[in-house]
Length: 381
Image (cartoon, rainbow, N blue to C red; front, top):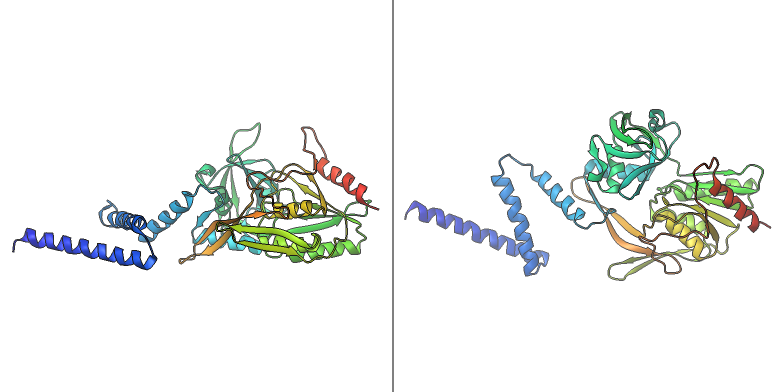
């Protein structure tokens, strides 16, 4: 038998073996004809790159890129693939402590803007300001990232540095090199407003401990003689829906808080057990109030338990689940949309305040908070 025939036989045998393997895998995965072809395309390209690409490749990197590409093809800025370092940063953030620079960011119109700078943090020390636009992180334009990836790239190990390119109105773009430090966030802070019997509670985000922190602050203000509450959800990007429900259970009257509806129509209902709200409430919202903060604001508005003051909220009415994968990485995937007690889906729409008031050029005080005080004063006995 000639060498050519032997070689041809080997190729044919290998091809048949590969096809049988793919067919068996397709059966195991329950794939139909077109999906089996897609699987063959994927594995064929992967194998071709591994064996013929001019440089040696890391198979794990190929898989990371394939997964990342699949998620990006959804066109959903809230669904992201997270490598090990990003996944770790997300878990640390929701736990309330992480390595970072101490800024809260807003994402609108493909721009990443600093909406607040925490006191005593590296960001404040470096001179970052509210309304600064973050143009690049470590030299990479933020337009190369999905919005929720930007924060993950800014966070990192304590003691390491991150380089931000900042655009500030009236100035040329400037680079800031900032050393990360441990950022411990208490997500809830409360106080009595001077000279009044009004309590004020600010929720910065919804982390693991937000429900307990809110209860603690609320009870302190009750003991201080609070007769009405201003709840500030401005610049609150959201967080854990479970923590949002814990807060809602303390101030939303008995009944629905939010309904989470998946693609197949299945619903997960979250209800309040509170028999009756204790106090009149006014809620402050703005264009950076998103996700879980909109769930809480929407529930309070729909049930008549609060008056909303400020400007229209962001409009993120989708729910994500964070799934650990196999190499300390993870997937954040949109799996459902949520609906307020009155059946509103505000995704891409936002929540309109009952009393609209925006900041104007030249304002030297918090006119929104002043309006909230005025509205709450009318509710007090």
